[in-house]
Length: 272
Image (cartoon, rainbow, N blue to C red; front, side, top):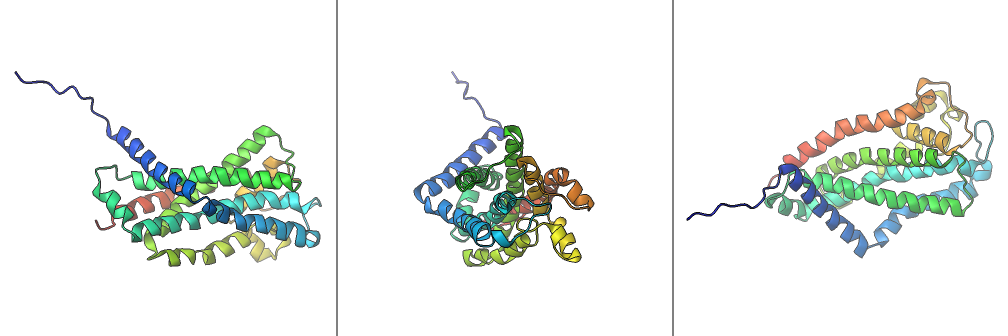
């Protein structure tokens, strides 16, 4: 007499989520065993806070007046999120060059798990980084005046920017040949963050440079978070500056729509 197999079958969606979580656990385990990596990622923004806030802060001006450190801190939060794509690219290219991704591709796992798992891992780490950086800011005297709900909204916008840049990092990590080349991406990130409203308001720059800085996607997130944190900074006259809150949501969606498909397509084209 034949028996009937009553083993419940799992849907592809279930295995996609389960495989994604396994990749996330792997990534978090690496950071748990090497916590110095998170400390290194936070070192540069914390050093920048001390350098710009205390060394150069007395010489910096804020449109409409006000404390420069209050003006600077939302920019530091956004800069930390922006620089995160370098870390993403470095981890991805390390896995690619050491055969980890090839081993994943040879396993019976969802093809989306490697890319989505990297994204979820980096988003979790971004929450940790932001929390530590905000606690550091509070310790040196930064006080947001926008209220708890606005503060949470600002936190969400910063994570939305990081989420969009994750896919930029994954795509670049699958393109560059080795981890050393991924480290060279700092040469791209540095002008991207400097020509923005992180350190200086665009209206204080030369007109042509201020226009470039105002249309930098990072500037929209910085301006929106300053508004939500209650930092009294007068916005510029351009359309992009007047609608910073809207564009802080639109820019990450545009970046995600462009680079997420590129990252997935690049991963699918990798040789087994």
